[in-house]
Image 1: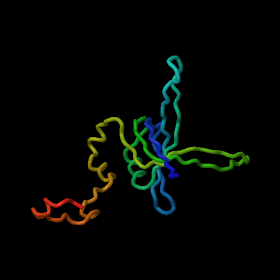
Image 2: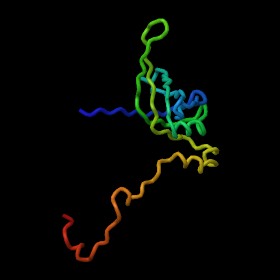
Image 3: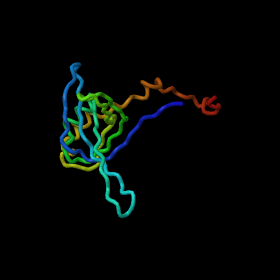
Image 4: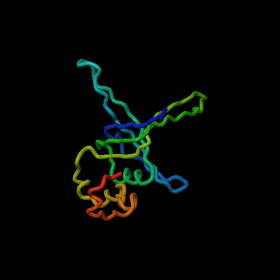
Length: 148
């Protein structure tokens, strides 16, 4: 049976992201996302979950440059569970999301001014010829033949 680990969250940053570099030179950014849960009934209050998000490399650079406290973002990634023992010997478990994609959910004037910078972080477009080879010319005779 194949396994699938994918999480999509929409929420607001609770503070400006923390950024650092690893000893190998990889960028790492982390922030906490406040995600509202819908009320269970019409008379109950909304509950907010605070979820740690971690981004790496180019996505971490994007986070460092463009994300700020209070921004509404969509985060897509995978759930990771960290387990360790605290100094007092108790077992600690914390969930976090390793981000694969982060998208703005609101328009901001700063975004519109920095379109060129944002485009640096988009995935490169692959040339179809690189994937499938050059397109072949078809003769008019070929058009009458079945494709198999």
